[in-house]
Amino acid sequence: MSTFTVPPIHKEGWRFVGLFVVVTAVLFFIWEPLGWLGIILTLWCAYFFRDPARITPNRDGLVISPADGVVQMIQPAIPPAEIGMDQRPLTRISIFMNVFDVHVNRAPIDGEVIALAYRPGKFVNAALDKASEHNERQSIHLRTRDGLNICMVQIAGLVARRIKCDLVAGRNVRAGERVGLIRFGSRVDVYLPDGIAALVCVGQRAVAGETVLADIRSDEASRLGEER
Image (tube, rainbow, N blue to C red):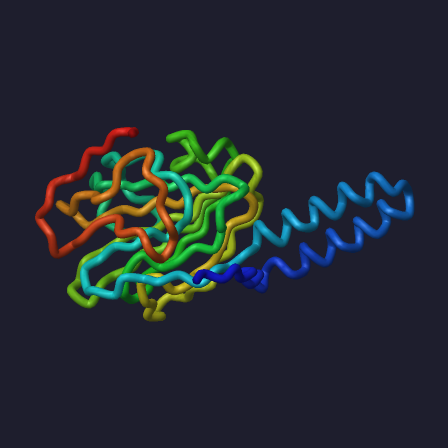
């Protein structure tokens, strides 16, 4: 028998929830119907910053989704220049998060944080391909104990105006570990090691910390999918 539980709120969200509560109280004072609208917005804010637990597959070699959302693009692309990786095309998996998705981001692999690079930029729709190049972004270079390199990029979107990354260079992370979040609708790109195929399909919904994006120990070809 399943039981319903309310997921905890990420620590970054409490000040926003508190702000919404204060604004709601003011709205009730001004005009009661506005106050009820404030309650709805406050509940949405708490929902946005939810931070549910996830069950992460822990076999070596698995690349796990760092974000909740829809796999929007899988295509060759050059990693951000500022991260210090080789400037040659790698398979890039782009996961788009809308304002109703969980926005806590998680590490895609077990490995060491080799480098971090923040670059300011525009705030065009994160669903567009050009967002990877022109939008504000936080790039993270990870290396497995086998010496394989993976790049994860947090990208701000049309509504998002804040990227938070909790990592520092030299730190070791585990796949599925919380590493930051983006407010309020955005995208995360993952650049796979050279020659590694994606095991998800465009249009598929990914779950941060749970969905397997790729297996660096496998020589399986990229998968195709169809809507049913």
